[in-house]
Every structure is written in C-alpha cells, then in structure tokens.
Amino acid sequence: MAKTSAVEKNKRRRKTVASQAAKRAKLKAIIMDQALPIEDRFKATLKLAELPRDGSKTRIRNRCEVTGRPRAFYRKLRMSRIALRELGNLGKVPGIVKSSW
Image (cartoon, rainbow, N blue to C red; front, side):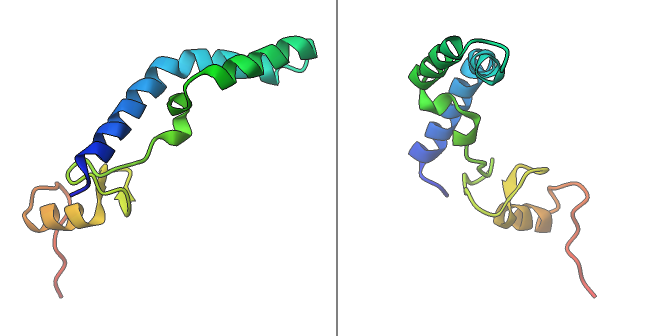
C-alpha cells in the first residue's frame, strides 16, 4: 500500500490539471503561433510560467486504483500487476483466468 499522502497529492494534481487545462492550452497556442509578434508570444510564455506547476499534465503519476502502487501499472485496467494477479486469482477481474497446463 502506498503512502496516503502520495495518493492524495496525485489526486490533487489531477484536479489542478483539469482546472488549468483550457488556460494552458490557450497560452501554448499563442506561444506556438509563428504569425504573432515575438513580444506577445513572450508575454504568453511568462504567463504560462506563472501558472502552478502541478497544472501540467506531465506531473500526474499513474497509480494503481487498488493499492496506490506507482510502478508496473496497466493503463487499461488502471491497476498494478500485483493487484491484477490477486484479483484475477479471486475471479474478480472479468476475462482474467489463472492459467494452468
């Protein structure tokens, strides 16, 4: 089980990303527009730098929904390999069957 503080911090980052997404996209579009004057693009760069860092999408860490484990994460199932194995053996994940031969 991961530290509760790490899991909560990641949830808080997800909320920040969701709230800042439109503002960040608008500023990035201004920055990347080559037709605009360099002064306007530089001002947009400064405004983007003033926004909270946790608003960036790259700050989010994929974590297991069951245990909070940050590594060996399956995106499709949103859980780690360990939780997947345990729940698969119990028959709680549809389509996962313990192999035997």
